[in-house]
Length: 267
Image (cartoon, rainbow, N blue to C red):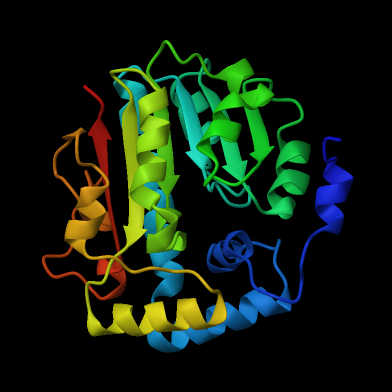
């Protein structure tokens, strides 16, 4: 029997922090609990700029989606999308091209509960509650197949989520499974925590101890996710340096180097 929104809502665990709700905290959202705020407070002790890091990630999402629409991409699969907030993928894409279609995928039941309510009157956007580690199920989902034409280029987005997959979960293989399913001319968009400083390595320890996930990979490891695809300029770089809208500091802070990102094209 298919699970209903009410079943997912009742499954919300308020005793442990969740990825989506913790991200909501650092975006100054309201869809979180004390356990999520306590987790973020511990991260702040190591990386005081963590709220700014969330803003950098949201900003590159906007720049990246606008760039992809400029390349003619009008359909997006946003994996590990998190809770709906301002300037989500569909806001950016549909403002640039009203015909854009977006499917959000997240395994947090709160994303389903809030997302479907917000998107009820948007027939070009859907929310799917599923685990991104199961590409076969997601690619066959009725909302995915309704909105996504797999004969046309797709923007596959893994923005701020791959670092929550452990090495033994084969994150690279998961990326390749999705990319194998979409045609030439599609794009892969990734942002990821980077082991760029001693502070970042301390933050990784906090994430793993308190959240159970949060793998801070090296720049080379992050770049490896793009192997086999045409990595676009400027490559895999700290988020503020990816095609910035304005000037950036000549020397970046720990927070500005905490996440790296890039976009690649499938030939």
